Image (tube, rainbow, N blue to C red):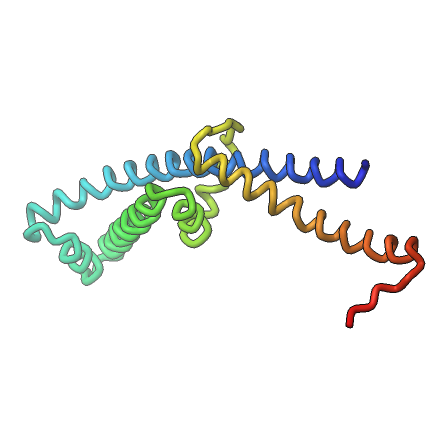
Length: 172
């Protein structure tokens, strides 16, 4: 009875954990979207300068700054370049979070930003999402938690059954 209860508890723990993953990804996507909006707003100011003086080429504006002899101007060029890189990175990360749940999980694993994930986790409030994908995720996670324990218990029971029966099981 205790063995069955432990497997059920592991399944329940896995099911509840897995049910939170879609909610966390949604919160992460929202957090990432806010960062992307802010970065785009900041970059738009420099893009307006590039439009006015460099035919719309942000790369030309950055080169102009980086090729300067003024250290302040060079530092500004580096900052603009980092901001443009950040917009590109955030845009790519956000795009992968708009697919189906397996794609979202893969994107989070491959391209997830640890700082954004930590900030999202700090604000995370558990909740249930009742979509077929979310329920499937919960079920798969529940099985992933409980099946190894189930298999281990079956392996441990096998020698005990063989001793009880008193005859070795020979295959031939």
